[in-house]
Length: 324
Ligand SMILES: Nc1ncnc2c1ncn2[C@@H]1O[C@H](COP(=O)(O)OP(=O)(O)OP(=O)(O)O)[C@@H](O)[C@H]1O
Image 1 (tube, helix red, strand yellow):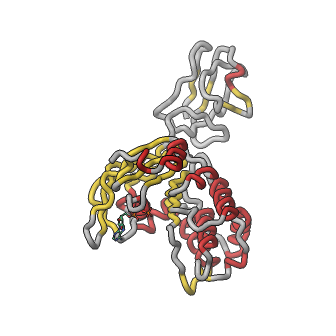
Image 2: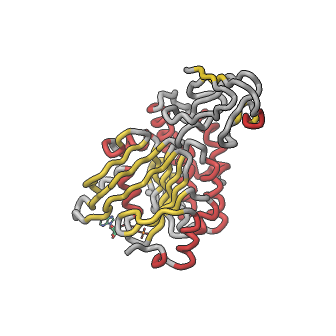
Image 3: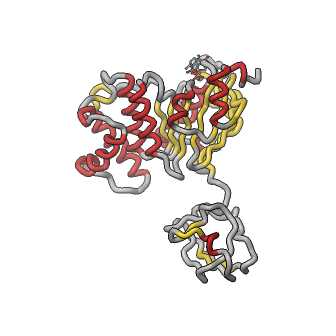
């Protein structure tokens, strides 16, 4: 904890070395001089509106009740020059993927069939079909590639597959409870009893508009395509993952289901949770607004832009965004 004073003419400095989650805990006197984003608020007051007086005293500690955004955003996932091959055939698929996802950001990856989008997602979660041949991936500052798939999940990476697997003989409720408690254990939190878990789960069922009867059925067994996708989002909600990777979550969904799923996903986003979506269609991005849209081509991200890139793609096709 540090205590700093500034003369009235000094703009509030940005503190790149401090976590953006530092908090203001004391302000003396009541009026101060500040220059910065409108998020500089304390006790519900926009500090810049008090911009006259002599000193500002600030205690810095993490985390606190009020948030002062003082530094660059925190990197959640950093992918550098990632290359990967199919383990069995040695076919090269990823050829130097670079991507940085900060906390709270929503990224969309689009690209032609076979460009490597799903492979990239699967490599991130440690799918055994692939072998990494180069590059690095760090998640919350730790080497993700060094972790077993299970550890990646416990660390906070969640992936929803294009075709969610069925698990015969395991009820959805038991599966969710086990998954939830495994993650809680890794976070040092006490396990939830089945009754406590039901209380935890109920609002999430409502959020994904899912009938509780699906809890008694075996995981994804006999579920329709749309029901499987909702179930995936329910799993995401239960696991409270910091990075959700959703591979074509919009495929096979009718309009109402797409809206339900998008609403549920949006409801899970927080300033510290991030989303990586793979999709072919702008319509998903109409509901879940991306911070960035990336185009993948031949195993690498070749273009990055805003939502307008997806609109251009929809209107003019891949030829207009290709670098080949
Ligand atoms: N396990 C595997 N075995 C053999 N080839 C594979 C395997 N996984 C991926 N590939 C090949 O790698 C290439 C990229 O596949 P990937 O599924 O990553 O593409 P994609 O961009 O997600 O495509 P789509 O948009 O059609 O889902 C394809 O040519 C695919 O056939």
